[in-house]
Structures are given as C-alpha cells and as structure tokens.
Image 1 (cartoon, rainbow, N blue to C red):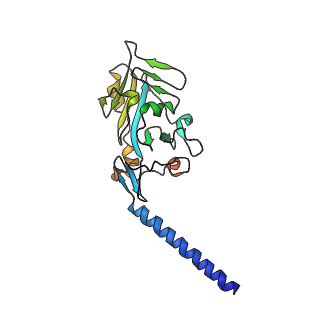
Image 2 (cartoon, helix red, strand yellow):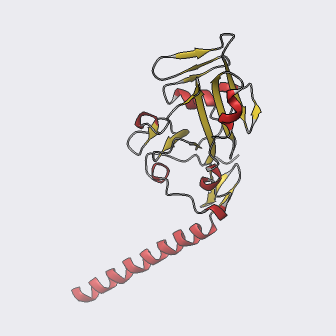
Image 3 (cartoon, helix red, strand yellow):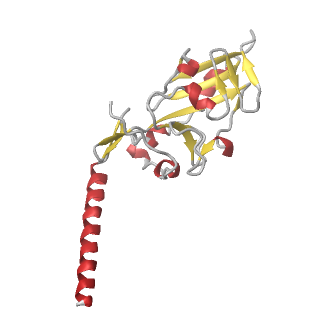
Length: 207
C-alpha cells in the first residue's frame, strides 16, 4: 500500500513538472522583441531598451567599466537604468521615462546644460574656450539631463573643443542592437546576469 502511494506521488510530481515545463517552453517560444516596448512574454511587455554611449572630458574617455559604475545582483545602482557585466558602452533601461540626469546621478555624476560633474567631485563647465556638448545619433541635442534615450540611440557627451567631437562620434560602439536583438546577423545577445537575476526587477507596466 505504501509502495503504491509512493508511486502515485511520484507520478503526480512528474505530471506537474511536465506541465510547468510546457508552459515555460511555450511562452519562451512566443517571446519576441518589439522596438521600444521590449521583450513580450507571459502577456506582459517587459520594458528593456538599450543605447550606445560615450563620455569624453578634455579628450579623455570616461571608463564606465570600472566596478563603481557597474550594477550587480547584490548592488543595483538604479533599478530603472544601469550598466552591468563589465560593459561600459551600453546603457540598459528597464523603466520608462528615465532621464540622463537620473542615469548619471546613479553613477555619482551630474549632467546639466552647461556642466558635467564626475564622481571625483570635479566639475567641467562652459568657460568660453571649452564647451559641453551632447550629440544623439550624430546630431547636437540640447536637452542634456532632461533627455530620455530611445532604443538604439547613440549618445555622445563631450567637454572640450568643438573640433574634437567629430572624431569622438566615430568611437561610439554599435552594439546596442545586439542586446535589443535588432541585428540578429551579428549574433545573439549575451546572457545579462544582472537583468536575469533577482537584483534587477522588470517594469511590467503596459501603456
């Protein structure tokens, strides 16, 4: 009798496990990436977009691969926008409407119309000879900290002489499309540890 009961329990567990696997597998197969909305699955719109970016101060690029700028499962600098997995070239946004001001604030920096502040406490402001400029997709943009980046944007923030900007624009990476699965011919996106872990909640709000 006890043996029969054990067999029944094992079979029941197996059936439940198979059912759960079928649900997860079926949803995974249905998950597709929609520009701006992000990944779609489980009836939700998982907001997750990406942008390539770079910051230059007096011709020197800021190294955002440094540990203090990287979010991990155990230490998320901002739940809505962050860098992770030792990548300092792509911003990940998980919450609608996150401004660049908030983005840099989460890194201990500041971005205003005429000044950029580093986490070292140094501030670089327009002084007649050197100017703070921001380019979005190759064009000057004066929104600075108020700007909310869009999927696949290429953003350059530079402080210095105007003639330096053209060369700096050419150094911006073009890999956000891989993370957003918009250039499949270049390969699949890497596993995003921070995003898939418990440390990075997803905004499931559907507009």
